[in-house]
Image (cartoon, rainbow, N blue to C red; front, side):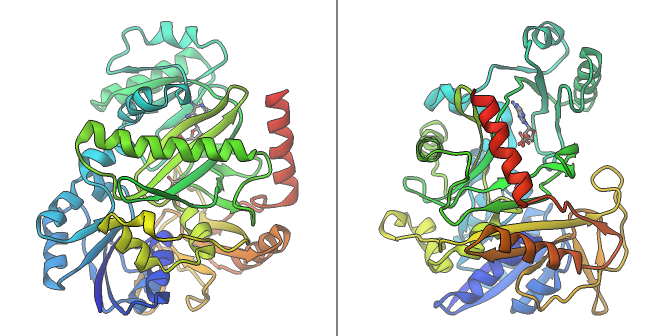
Length: 435
Ligand code: AMP
Ligand code: GLY
């Protein structure tokens, strides 16, 4: 019997909780999260609803229930040093310590790690903590630029020329708003191409790679609108994507492996958890857009839906440093995941309205919700995801579309995610970029 603490209560954590309960290893699952997700609560021996911002009280929960392994879902507790605090109390963690999680929490740090181990994966860029020199650099990047807040902003701190920023003045105003908050920012060359996510289970030395997934960050159909945490994702049965070559996938895998080793070199600590590389295939090869230090959301729902290897065994291998001895395999099925989000999301989302769905459905993953008196209410961020899984991506997409459409409430979703026409347009876009 093993006691597992799951930190977080979104759709990603529902996917993790289900894999824990599917394991051949008997476990008691405990969850600590800032809201009550009825799907996780049902699988848990005890559920602790409390702020994740208070590391000490999360550690107190872990001690109270004698946790063996903690799995940290979201990024904010990593930044607060939850893993450092839990490890001090003898709790093994799937998730990196604060100094290593900096690969996600500071975009400037991520770029400098890459400079040391895979410099060709970096775009041209500069880090600023004031507007000095910013205008000159924006003008120097003739093909466009991206302005990024150097910290966590739930995927919403990035603004791109031609899409969100329509003049140098727009860019300077956004940069100035970051400086006004006391932050620093990066200006990067705007890369053109197709994005993909490659996540790897990592014990600090060995990486076991997951299938490649494509996320859709923009809020609206046709890839327009503000950036979001991710509106939906798809993956193919061959674990690659139709616009990628085998060499491109290997290149991304190698990059994750190099980054894991470089992190230990520079911080003295091993990366134990999931290393998530956000990549883009461009005319000059595979480039890195960002790194995350956890399972992606929605990507977790795609990869865990097809994971064949026992999830608790993977967690034990991550914390025990024996991942190289475990064969990690995924079934050869395609997946499509679509999120429903509140009207007005991400800028001005509706909140506190009731959501109507069947929480017993194993393809449904509740996310930003709060259970009250047996009813489910949306709390204002991504509300629920629905995953279609099938050998044929066309079938997977229609399963996801039907499932997501049946979720009732003041919600919307992107119908285009995973459709043949959107995937075809991705392939054509890649051909154009490479020609
Ligand atoms: P990030 O939070 O760094 O992943 O950025 C969010 C989104 O902004 C990415 O998924 C990309 O679509 C876009 N983005 C970030 N950096 C760049 C870049 N250098 N060039 C083009 N697009 C970018
Ligand atoms: N899907 C993007 C993320 O998890 O950050």
